[in-house]
Amino acid sequence: MHVRSSIYYIISRVGAGALSLVAISLFARALGPSGYAHLNLAVSIGGVLVGAVSSPLCQGFGRFFGAEGAKGVLHAQLVRVLGHVLVALLGIALLAELFLPQHDLAGVFLGGVLLFGAQGVFDLSSQNSNVSQRPSDYATQAVVKGGLLVVLALFVTRLPHPVYASLAAMVVSFLSAAAIFSWRHWLCALRTRLDMQVLRPLLRFALPVVGVAGLAALQQWSDRWLVAGLAGRTQAGLYAATADILVPVLMLIASTSYLTWYPRLVLAWDADDKAAVRGIASRHLSQTLFLLAPAGVGLVAVGPELLPLVLGPRFAASTASLLPWLVLAGAFAGLRSSVLDVSLYVLHRTHLLLIPYGGMLASMVAANVMLTPRFGAQGAAWSAVISGAVGALLSAWLGRTGVPWRMSLATLLQIVLACVAELVAVKVASRDGVTGLMGQCVAGALAYLAVVLTCNTMGARMLVMRVFARMRV
Image 1: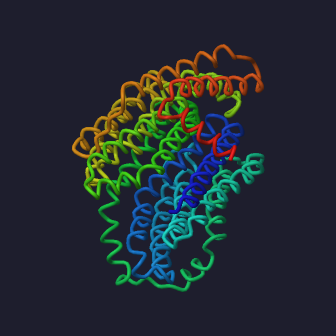
Image 2 (image 1 turned 90 degrees about the horizontal axis):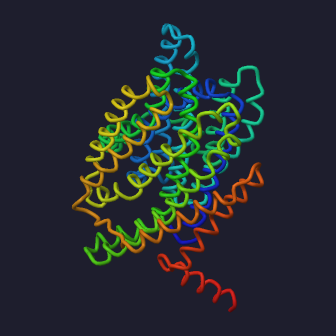
């Protein structure tokens, strides 16, 4: 992407993430821990199915777009594939709803499958915009979906059955955003029949991806079912809502940094320029920590006051104890996915990602079985940290012959010093109410910036001076 498109993409992605957090807040405040757990169990089923089915199809679409996709043929074929899979899964979900005795799970399986279908449609539409060289549509589509969901959430949470109404709002927001940007392709799909000759190369590519993508999705979402089964739905709701607010923020920060340096790293690696690879890797590991560390420290510092405002008073009792552990788990996830896994990408050994994902899943299950029955949501948060650490260590070990991730000790110490100053400033500025919370955030940010500018961490002071010099001109 060009620089302007890249900036627009990053801003749109941040905007979409912010809208998603607003929607989570609305759902959590309206449904409470137990209702949010019910909703989240359906979302987790949809998430696993998306990872195992639609994500490989989208990757295959990007790989083989040049052959048939210019006229929408491949896109229409993939929609038909998704439709056939959806019909089969709906049949299974209906049988589960009819014959399984757990009445407290009513609607979870059917809702999860419907969410999978809607998100699959949305993801294919987004990928169509991406491979068609329409980055503005690709970025805007997620913002439109997030905005629709927030608007719908304001109304559906007041209906008689808010959990099911919330699931319907998610489905409608996915489908509506896809229809706005790709309605011509959906009309084409309705008139298309499956053509295995067109699909065969893509399916041959996508099927091996199912293992990695499906295992990654299972690792990401299965903890919700473990907590619900081992500690009950109230504990599952407390854990899920807190994790849904904290972890995506940290992963978004890490991925935003990743977007700015990954292309340059790949070019240097392909050119076999080892000095350039070392320099780029060092600078951008530093950049990731430069952004991730203050965000994590800030969330831990202001979280006890922030999370009850975001999630509602019914979550206030437990969020403070879960906060530092889930922030640490989110930091591990961000570093692994946006830094450590990159070595396996450039080495073309993405099949080895099965090992860290499998290790995370196994350690998460084992830790939850041991800790969650006794400690509830707190044990689940500890399990998330253990799983994240295992995944990061395995990715670092498997990619040890790839990108040399190093950073200077001086930069690391300056970041630590700035984070300590941020934490002290937040505590000193502590006041009650929303105004006090805003004051804490401003004080922490100013303290962090003061230290990094004084120390010229990663050339921050020189960058600010160049910006002011250009403004004067």
